[in-house]
Figure 1 (tube, helix red, strand yellow):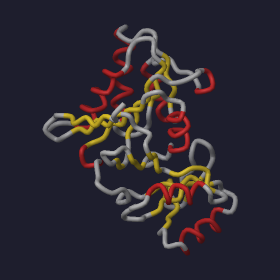
Figure 2 (cartoon, rainbow, N blue to C red; figure 1 turned 180 degrees about the horizontal axis):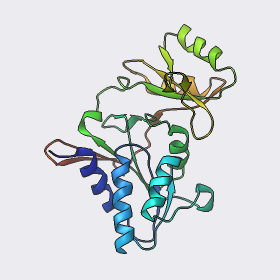
Figure 3 (cartoon, rainbow, N blue to C red; figure 1 turned 135 degrees about the vertical axis):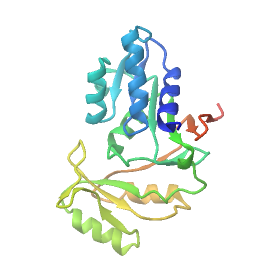
Figure 4 (cartoon, helix red, strand yellow; figure 1 turned 30 degrees about the vertical axis):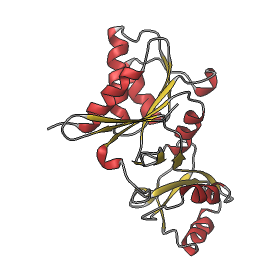
Length: 228
C-alpha cells in the first residue's frame, strides 16, 4: 500500500538545492520531507544547506538526522519552505495549524521566497472549513475570548493536550479551534480574527503557497503551480 505522505514528502526534497536556506515544516507529511533532507545531508548530496525549523518537534527530528539548523533571525531569507497543510484549494487558499505550530509556520512563511505545500489529495477541497480553523490566543482573558467566539456562532473549542490540560504552543499560547464547516469568505474571517484583541494569529494561510504537491493513493502526485 502506498504511503501517500511519504511519497509526496520525499518528492518535495527535489526542490532543494545545495547551498540553500531551507524552511522545515511541521506535521505528519512534513516529517517525511525532513527525513529525506536528512538522508541527502548524510549522503553529501546536500552538504551545504542550512535549515530553519518551524517547531521544536521538527527541530528535534532534524537534529537527530544531523541537519544543520539556524534560527530565523540568523538568515536574511529562506530560499524554499516545504510544509504541510490541513486543507487547501487549488487557488492556494489554505488552513494550517493542526499540529499547533501555525504562528511559527506563518512567520517562517513570511520570510520565504518559495513555498511548497505537500498534502494528500483528500486535503484538496473546493471550500475551506471542514477542518477546524485554529486560532492562537494569549492565555490572559482566554475564556472571555472563547465566549465572544461562541456568541458570534463560531463554534469554538479549546484544544486539549490531555483530558485535563490545554494544549500550549511553542510560544506559550492557547489554541481555540473554530468548527465552521465551511468558510465561503476566508479573507473576511481572516481580517476579523487578526483584528480581535487577544488573538495572536489564525490558521488561514491565504495566497502563501507557490506550489501544492498532492499525493494520490496510486502513488502519483498532482502539482498545482501558481502562475508567475
